[in-house]
Image (tube, rainbow, N blue to C red; front, side):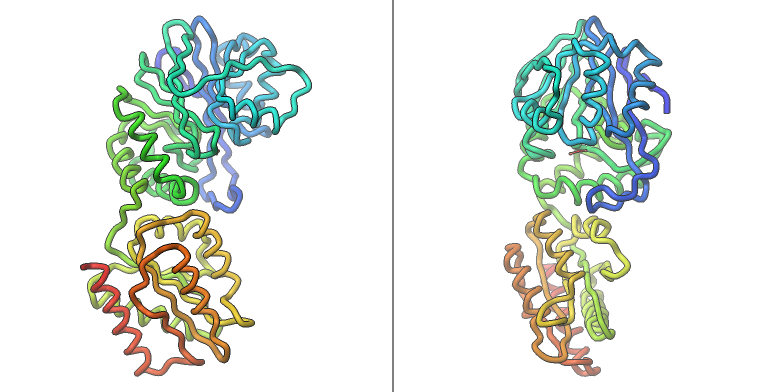
Amino acid sequence: MSAVEIKPGIYWVGAVDWNLRYFHGYLTPRGTSYNSYLIVDDKVTLVDTVKDYLGDDLLSNIKEIIDPSRIDYLVVNHVEMDHSGSVPEIMKVAPQAQIVTSKKGQKGLERHFKPTAEWDYHIVESGSKLSTGKYNLNFVQTPMVHWPDSMVTYIPEASLLLPNDAFGQHLASYQRFDDEIGWEILHEEAAKYYANIVLPYGKQVTNALEALSGLDIDMIAPSHGVIWRQYLGQLLEVYKQWASHQTQKKALIVYDTMWGATKNIALALKDGLEQAGVPVVIRFLQTSHISEIMTDVLTSKAILLGSPTLNNGMLPTMSAFLTYLKGLRPQDRIGMAFGSYGWGGQGAKEVSEAITSFGWEQPQEYVNMLYVPDEEELDEVRRKGKELGDKILS
Ligand code: FEO
């Protein structure tokens, strides 16, 4: 993939990771990209790098524009290795370059790389500016979007925001701009990305959106996926909704089953919710990956979680999902637990306790059925589903 000029003298020079399918727990069926941006001005500036194994692609793209040894500034918006993995390679080629980063960025780079040569740092914080000639780089710290060191770079003369992880999508493509792909796919990937990476940091995202709200921006160039230039309005609107944990009046049922009884309870709950007029998504933990289910969690008001009892507890698949869910901290949800058991019956109880620990409302007592529910019992489950549906719609 060759360099692409996105604004006068500003180039995408990143790398496309076509075959990445697993990103520490997140399935990425469409691959991803690591976007670096080269600003050719009086001072030549590179903003962020790429994963270490794609460093040659980065250098080759830079070489299409200039000799990489001419880089004066290397901006590190975020230390995570998908963006700073090739910092040592750049510093080898351009050892005179100043690394422009936050204090936490400097600490993170030193801890990750333990460089043998001394790197020259230019430390910035929110409000710091750096002139490259006709452009001025403005820095805004956005802690926890995605790590404590995260910051964004804004270039007012180009109405361009380089927000690193924020507004990204895991999507490999030869197109570089949103209008070349279309809102439908990008909305899906941006939502999955938000749900699996940014969801715990709603408050910080809201603060970042407020800090950026007064700025003149006509292009957002994140460090993953394509560059936003057509769908900025839609993107900022959904980010505001996601950051404030706004959901739709719909239900998500997530379950695993051993011999089909918990599945039958899941289907009866689905019937009841649908009788109330609530749209339902149903996900089976043996065939849906937890990172895919998170996209449904992002927008669902009610989340119903079902597991039979195995060895005095819930199934390990449900336990893994709940661990993932706990870390991502969706808020303002209605929860309900259900399950089946042969003896003991701790599975559904444990799931219900997990829901309580998330701070979600739990208007219905958990459903727990001995062995196989009969038709009468399933009718009772349908009635509970209908009641829950009425509550969601109220
Ligand atoms: Fe894309 Fe937090 O790294």
